[in-house]
Image (tube, rainbow, N blue to C red; front, side, top):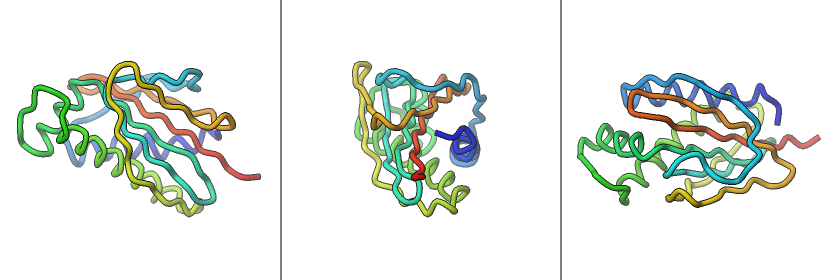
Length: 153
């Protein structure tokens, strides 16, 4: 994957967290992902298709996922439940949509978010796609973004 394709997703994470949640994010590590385990307990996966195809994964630590729900829905939750999954899915949809707008030349369509929870789940990209993973830190805790896109020759 071309490294410059990750920047619209990084910007979108920052914009969505600041605008929708009033929470700033600080970008930490950036690396090629070489394993299938997500970084944190709650992950949303959205497929992308068009002139570029692949997927985006937003993986949130438990503390961040719970705080997202508290902020968006103004309710306190103590466990990962349907509200948490819905909120993280919608957050991921906003991140992917913001990046898609900045990558309009690829005419991408977004799929519906798929939610995965638990520490031992795995997310596999196709063998020809090598996703870039970006770690972020917030005042609520850590999260990560994985983006893997394939551009046809």
